[in-house]
Length: 117
Length: 114
Image: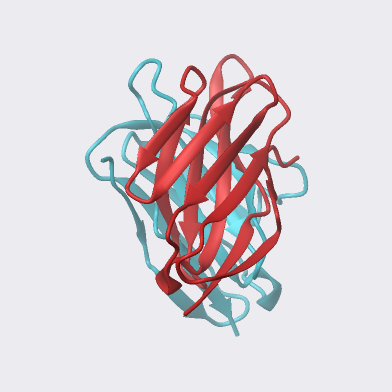
């Protein structure tokens, strides 16, 4: 099946610094990638939808200036958590949808655990 | 808003028993996927069922889909302690011009006692 690689799998950073998380589709092209956030024992909450070559669409309540998303190519999207604070500590997961017409399967990365100290 | 809602929220069974989890959704979907997540880990894709399918099998997993009731069930037969995890359903719903966004329910926490 299609593989989505997320990097890093975990990161610890100091409060006030920025962290970049990469999401790559390894063996397929993805016009659309999705970024999710998961708090402990909670479901995944969609943060934003990222389309290659255009601005991301953010869900209500998600600060676009804090969570910068760049989808520069058909195989790479990045999420940058700017000026991170302890409350940003969470599990971030990306998924990518294949470009194939009519195929609506989305494949997920393994997630990135961010801890802000 | 969340699309899929799993039921029950928590399920505790003995090894060897069957575990059934249900998922209900609200809008029309193109497909529904079930995922497993072990504590603190990423998602593992279990099975995808499309709207024109009623039942699919994969090993000890059986998934059904009833589009008239907007519900799906995941059955794990002969459960093992290693099946202990949270199980989520994700639906691909329509979004602005035909794109599909997978949205998740809260999940069912399954504990299988050895």
